Amino acid sequence: MKQRPKKLDRRISVAPMMGWTDRHDRYFLRLISPHALLYTVMITTGAIVHGKKLEILDYNPEEHPVALQLGGSEPQDLAYCTKLAEQYGYDEVNLNCGCPSERVQNGKFGACLMAEPALVANCIEAMKQASPSLAITVKTRIGIDDRDNYAFLANFIGPVAEKGCDTFIIHARKALLSGLSPAENRMIPPLKWDTVHKLKQDFPHLTIVLNGGIKCMNDVRQSLPHVDGVMIGREAYHNPYFLAHIEEEILQTTKVKSRAEVVEAMFPYMERSLQGGGDLKDITRHMLGLYQGLPGARHWRQVLSQEAYKPAASLHVIQEALKYVS
Image 1 (cartoon, rainbow, N blue to C red):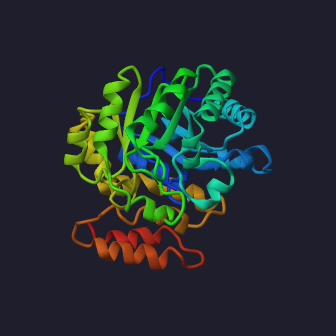
Image 2 (cartoon, one colour):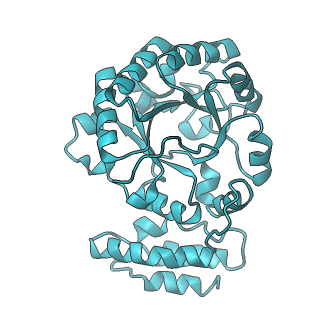
């Protein structure tokens, strides 16, 4: 097990994204970005406590630093899952208090928990007691429905911080718990970065990470003077090499892999996966955006999209796709 760092570098992280940031994607992103903090998809406590397939917690050792995001609201279950995460070697456990989907609300977790700061505080306390040395964080919104004033947000942060959570990842949009889909909730409520900036000013002892709407290098440059870090969502998925540019400019990484070197480094991983019975498409679907904006990118995507889904697809698919971007 890799030794857990005493303090995580949170300047750059990649958001947990359901259906996207699985272990294949995280392995791929780590080749591009040696230092970004990566997050799993949200895993519910029920899937761990009552499920029979604990392999959902498995990850590649190369992914470190990597955080497990949990969905739940029962302190005892969250404590159990946190202890298990520590045993698995995760670098952080994050409690989801920001997802607005109806399924999540029915499970009494996600964004609806913003209305119950005392419950969230109890959850954090139980998680900290279960694993005192593990980083326990919260990802949330700036508000829900018509409760979107700054006082509501501050009154949520305060009690939770008092119970031991010193890091909050704030999606700078409120969540509308009815009437909008999760996708619409990522786009329709207006972004309010200033609200997150103010939160850092008022809670200077806390680590505040800004999430939402980070799409270019200028967004990163403008945000970092006001907060402790930025979390990048869909841009890191659709245009993953964006992370390499951040490594060079923001994190001052002296040597990052070229796109071709990233693909070359993926070959052994893909070969191991295929030998283990995996499907090529489950890996290549995460690589479609690697050459975004460059000549041949469309053909790269076409080959991967069409050929990798065929039965018995092999690494020859990647070699064929590379002909268009080399």
